Length: 440
Image (cartoon, rainbow, N blue to C red):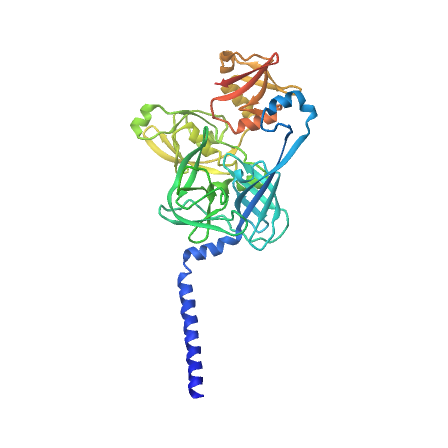
């Protein structure tokens, strides 16, 4: 009996020691990455979208549809089908506001989010979207107190810093990849005449976890993951959270990003300047009256070298950077005047009410008035690009860069997104004939 009790006691002690050692080993494995993921993962959601597509039906679907629609269109019943897409997002507010990529929810008829493995899908609504910045804000329709990850800062990121990309690509669990930062300001051309600044890492980012958060080792939100380079194996790009934070209030309050106004008329610097200075810049050709630039003391012939420490080497880069600011922001310019470089902080404002139409006349040389169902060219300035290409008063402007326009308001909204981007294509109608022209 004594031996049996001794054996039982010895076994109990051994089990206790084993448990203590195991818990100690588990504690050793709970490193900074584990802690960061534990802090952030509850705020990561799966996003599933549905898009309802209607098209004219045909008994020969996929073969000669246009021919059958031409002759039998009225007899063919429209067909409706539904497509689905998946992505990720991150809750940034306890009320259920979600930050994600615009391409994740673009053209969606319905949006659903899944918060975790144990929760069913909840419907969400689109609050605001900006396709140029590839950012969107959603709101969970059901009121609640949701886990969230407050936006941090990306202005102090370091090369070689460990980062973590989290997604919820299938709504069944989290996708977690780690990597290091190889660039804090990688400039990528994402479309014609449009470049954006990204954080570049080697954390794997794919369409499923696009829109999810990039966090640092402290579990702070520093970027929104974006799958933009399909051919780039082992390279991930994320929108810096400082860029997203600047436009967040506009997306929530206005549903879009308002255009900021600086008041500089820029032109490209010459090749001689680039050779002598070793870098490019944007030459200030003119300053708008009563503009933020004039108030801040910018002058003609100044050269803008950088915006908030991001180098500016062309007009395209200048306008691409400016679009990530709102009228409530301040920006810091690095300016070259003569041989002296200095910083200039400027408070931006909203575009003046008539600015777009005056810009159109100054750059393209025509003025518009509202017609019954279209915009009518009211006047063409002598010697202007419009005059030289043959546009006349009475012509109709029906499209801008393949976008239909029928109202002055619609025209101004499209032009706001294209200020400084040249040339632009216009579809002009005269005597029931359409002509595509590029200006200037």
